[in-house]
Length: 81
Image 1 (cartoon, helix red, strand yellow):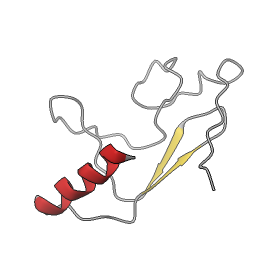
Image 2: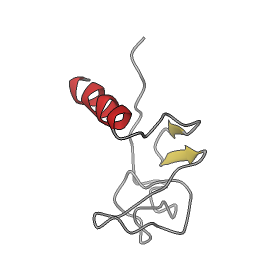
Image 3: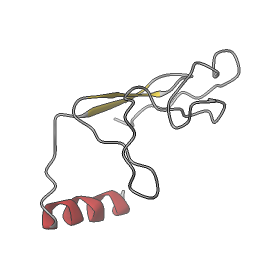
């Protein structure tokens, strides 16, 4: 995770601290986002909605999950020990 380390250094330099935000990768489903998180688009516009983020690409409400993955998306991602 070479790039992740570089991002942490950048956040420290611009004064962005680590929050209590948590992101959980659900088996065959979305990224479940909990905590104080601001989600922005490529132009920096803030999404008003909060919730689970789509991983499958089928959602009609991207970047948020609308359940379209059910029965069509297979992805189980687990951290190595």
